[in-house]
Length: 370
Ligand code: HEC
Ligand SMILES: [Cu+2]
Image 1 (tube, rainbow, N blue to C red):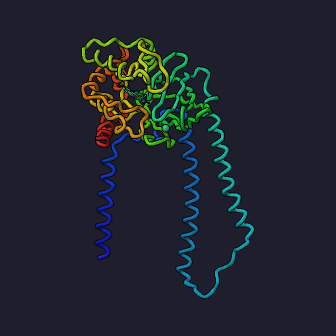
Image 2 (image 1 turned 90 degrees about the vertical axis):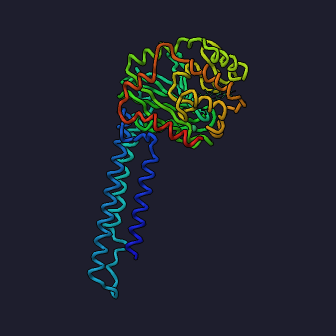
Image 3 (image 1 turned 180 degrees about the vertical axis):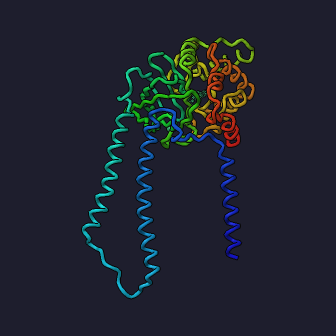
């Protein structure tokens, strides 16, 4: 009876595990699957900590096991075991050994903190300012004069230094495969750096509880071949093509009349004011709303009409748009593309590995949000 019960329990457990594994199709970035020397340094620290932990565990298990086996063999219930209270040798051993272990970890960790901070970045590093806001990331390239959001475009092989700050609460920038976490603290700029080595998409996430949509504050780092990056930079300086379709033209008018321009800027139309993401090339982004939805017309309409349902606590108001108005706006926004550059193509061509799970990612989000 007991055996049967444990079998049923085991089968249920395995079933549950399988279900969870299948449901978990989101790309989960693995900090040990490193794509920069900086992430490798952190992974190295992880293995030191892991090594010592396993060592301590083994020591405890061996002594415990020995004591249990001896106790069983001797079965002596009457005599007191030998008393070791105050044993100088033992006390020194278990004070000095942990001290040594923690000392080694301390020295290694301080070295890494020092090397990974932005001030230790190479001189030729590309500088990008990242401003965290509830619940999205502004990325600006001071030397290139480019402003974008939520998708950090970088050239492979060149070090990048990030100047991190926050407009409201504390956020934390984390792209596990590229670097460790660094907090974005209002009024206290911080820096970090890393050198992306491989082309592809790297998923990131705000790692500090910053409000209702903290979990929807995602980001992507798109690492391009240097020549493609240069093409992206050149295209990002030209205004997007003016709309020609009737629907898109209608959308452009709504963009002004519905007050979108109060918070969003489009290159050639109005100036950027940091209230909402710059939308100059929103049509070329792979996702919208900080990695929450795949960028397509249907999702854009949903975002514009049901903003606060898609992203709880969002700071973009629900403007009560009709389906038609939202469709016109979506047509206009879709046309706001980087002239002559197809980011999806560049990324698609360079990331045939498992990291490019965009499809499964978006389908699961749709399931969540509907
Ligand atoms: C009060 C300011 C405000 C107004 C008005 C506003 N938005 Fe927004 N919008 C935001 C903010 C803030 C975000 C970022 C939301 C987030 O991802 O958490 C945003 C995000 C977006 C995004 C996604 C951008 C991205 O980088 O993923 C689009 C597209 C957008 N808004 C379009 C519009 C349109 C079209 C209108 C007019 C109908 C509009 N917004 C009106 C503040 C505003
Ligand atoms: Cu955040």
